[in-house]
Length: 335
Image (cartoon, rainbow, N blue to C red; front, side, top):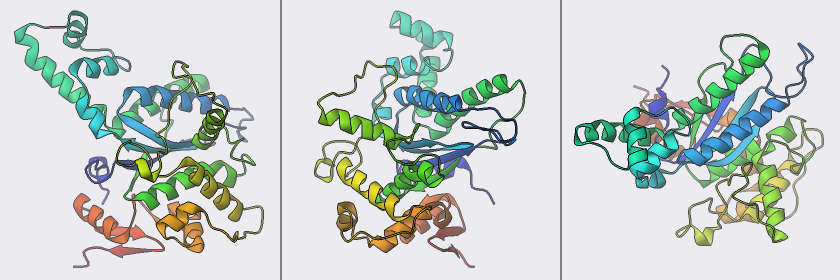
């Protein structure tokens, strides 16, 4: 039986989630469509631009993204601390960037106050919108609906553009997060779309590499630039208690992704370099295990990834009876 989306996303257990969405009717987001001969490259830009807008409005950080020919990947982190700290004015201001506001909320934002008989209605609206600003379901709804409308208008047709609701995958620990980000960042290279990370357009890894190079030349991207938005940063393990982010250094992650990509290139015989990356040494993961894990991430795991005991606990909490991990599926409650 299908588990409800509400149960599959549990910020109290983990804030990190991998989400995927695919097109229907053999529709293309980008590239040359072999069925009608048209090029839809520009649609990849639609996706990335909308992600940038939503990341500035929602209390949700973007860890990684990759826009492929007929689907896209996102790795997201729900920032519940930021969500809970929003003032009523901030909640209303953010929500009005996406939707037409309720007259009571609009009046409150303009006047700074509201009559006592409308206070309860305003409080209810703010509470509802504040909850939505930390919801991956609402984030994805805002993203997918706009892209579908624009694509249908361009194709001069009606009907569904996406094959269904997005698929989500809870990431329960650091290894699961790194493996998933690696899988997303290497997706275009494995698909043969691009030969290098630097040329991997419409991906987070290209954005991170450009920012990293700019930082080294003392030229930081301007936050006033409308085309710029900050991905959840790598902060290094030594700063994890002080600063929100991914608890590894980006230089170490870059070393790992470059090493992984070279080892499992589909067009060349794989090899293992004599010195494995620092991150693997810190986490105590063997090179062979990491390569198998990152290359077959989607085959090994369904809607949750992490240590076996964590996955079983997550499944039991969400009401699932089966847990897929590594190379086999196991029943949690055989009786």
